[in-house]
Image (cartoon, rainbow, N blue to C red; front, side):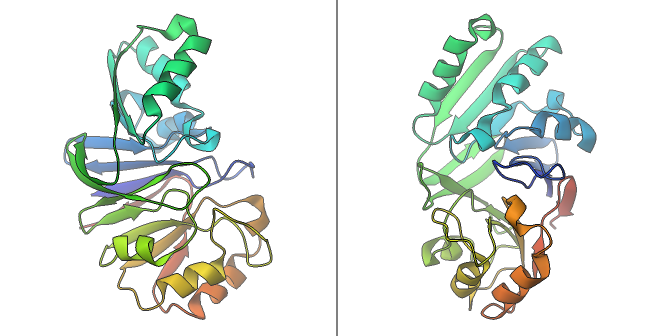
Length: 244
C-alpha cells in the first residue's frame, strides 16, 4: 500500500502546505481521501493525476476538505472521464446537490455515485474500510484500512480514536496547533501525546498544520514525547509512505 500526503495544511494557507488530501493506492486501486483547496494541483505534481481518481472518500464537509471537489469533477469531465464516486458521512448527498445547484452547468456532466456511510465497516474503490466517529465541530469520520493506515480526520485527541488506530502501521493524526494556542475540535501536542501514551502504533504523522506551527516543530515533538515514546513525524505535502 502506498499513501501519498497531497495536502497537510489547514484552512489558513502557509504557501508550503495545501489543504487536506490523501491518496491511498494498492495494486490497481486508487482512492482520494478529502479534496481541499490545492489538491487538484497536487494530484498533477504527484504524478498520480486526476484522471486516476474515480472515487473520493470524505471525512467531513468543511471547506478545507471539499473545496476542490467541484474542480475535480470539472477536470475529469473535460478529460473525457464519465463517472465519479463520492462517499462520505451523512449530509454528503445534500452538499453535492447544493454545489451543483450553484454551478448548474456541471449538472449531468458526470455520472455521480454518491453514498453516505456511518461508523462501521464498508468498502470503497476496492478497499475494505472501517469508520469511527471523531470529535469535531461537524460530523466527521476517521478511517482505517486494515492494520496498515488510519487517518484521524479532524478531531480532538481522545482514547476512543487512539484505540481505533491501535496496532496500525501508520496513523496520520490532526495536530493543528502548538500547546500555547487555546483550541477546541483539534488537538495540541500535549493532549495528543497524553492520549497516545501506551498505545502500539508503528508510526504517527502529524497533519492539518496551521501557520501557528511553523518554526515550532521541535518543541511540538518534544511535547508529544513527554508522554508518548513512539515514532512521531511531521507529514509533508507530496510525501509518499509505502506500507508493506
